[in-house]
Length: 326
Image (cartoon, rainbow, N blue to C red):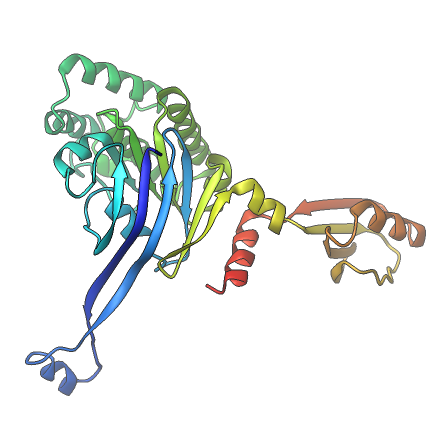
């Protein structure tokens, strides 16, 4: 049995219908019409202990609902979920000691006091023994480079500094599972790299199971080997990131710098655009080998330079969405 088992989970919400106009608004005071919205429909998956899984999908797909069920905030309409031997919404008091949550757009830090004061408060909330708390805090301060900012009021911190403190706060009680929702949103390149390196480090050293939800595909590419794609409340893809790349990374972007005109018609050339210093091509590498393509062109024109780029992960996900019609 896997560490996290989600079996046939469904969750729907009763939402009031809202119509425009003063007359309709007045009528709604006396009688409201409702509709049922299915946020999650019969979702099943399993996650092994120590895995990093990217849980992705478009807005409204059901990601947040699933995470709230997994963290014990919501109770599903039907289905089962086991994390270890616990059911998140039934064993909530014991379960929350095992999880950490970081929301990129919500803060668990008190705004007007230093992060360390919030850490001390969390120590009491989680009833962490003094010796263990001091040791864990010291490790987090060192690994996340918080020494110079831990005593600064949170409102005076930059976004990158605050996010590092948020991650430290979520890990003070040494959780077995870490839920990360947009952990690098709005961060600069240096802060992103620091956060990603730290996440990989705690996963390797502590075997922390990490579920990452994000729209930043570079986070997924840097951290996760497996992705679960959800759309319209259902799991549409569950597999390795490498398999996805193998299936959708066939487009190659080739720029050929030349002063000569290129006239070429080959199967697999998807697009040709004339540019100032040459031509830009998009080719399908499943139909046309790059070396064969360049060999044909080199016989026609004098090539000054060549640039070759692979399909990026964002475009692969978009193509996957199109294939799955979501």
